[in-house]
Image (cartoon, rainbow, N blue to C red; front, side):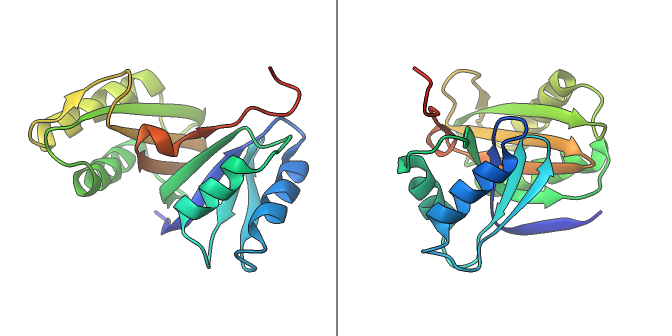
Length: 177
């Protein structure tokens, strides 16, 4: 299993607009991080590797910039290049135990565009149960939780995030009302 930790963002865009979104990302972040890298990880998804600025700062720069091709900006805590469902659950649980304090609410969100997991709804329920049993006093709350455990499965890779609801950015794209 190939695992990476660091300052990453997963950016979604419209199909066949990945290169234009990449230009918007680089135009925004390059003045602050000349070593920023952007790579296409699947259709509609770009991975942003930050070197000289923090993830929160990069998100804010992208949030306030008027863009035409960036739809969602998702902070990423951990990337697994090859994994199975069991290993993925264990790593998500360990990350959750390190980032979610006792007594708060959480939700698990999983988007499956690959074969690492069989069923995203079952994965969400099982991982939620594991977290609830492992962290004292936490409760599942699907609307407005304190923390979101987000798992994006793209092909053979999984992108794991544990974020507050305010850290997930959904942009209105120019031309949308």
